Amino acid sequence: MFGNKKEKQKSCNEEINILDIKNNAIYTRDNYVIMALKLNSINIQLFSKRELNQKVKEITSELASDLKELKFLSISRPVDVTDLVEKLRGILSKSDIQKQKNLLKQNIRETIRLTITGEVVERQNFITIFDKNSDMVEKELLKRAMDLVNKFGNCGIKVDILNEQELIQLCNSTLNINFAFREDNEYDEKIPYLQVG
Image (cartoon, rainbow, N blue to C red; front, top):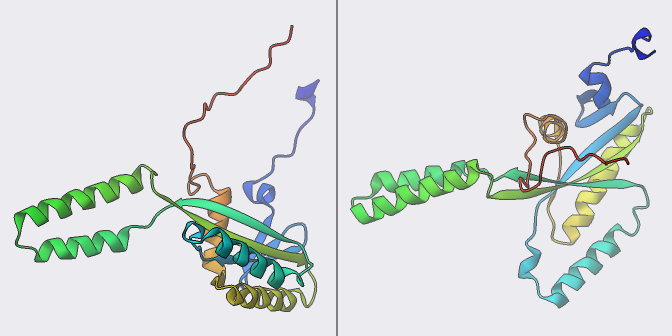
């Protein structure tokens, strides 16, 4: 009978596998150390086909010597429009023209609406590198991270190594339902059942 066995309940921390976040790295319960890098976006729609092929060749050539495993992660988040809205409000406060004031108010409302409804999202791209925990793993991962920053920089792509606060935000984006953002709401959320018979 199922009711006779007592199952050990796991805490959320045990399920997630994160032991600690410090020294700009994530330490896991299964004895790995992870560092993450954020790739600043480039708009590939602005490239011609020839330019895009050249960019792909550049990146491939730069990364060819890095033979260790890495993982790519892409997350959609609502666009932060705080600076834009503040700028528009500043212009609004200085304006004496009623038509301009009405247009600015309408623009501010629409910008906020698009953000709140999730119609405007930005794609954030990350690379994670990792290795088994050892005495020198932090230094080796940092050296590899700096090498990746330089390689992508040679291709015109700015890459930043995430600090502890940014790692916490990244973990929250992927693991915490209160922070996660669902990109597409057009699917049916009901659980499908197979009919046997």
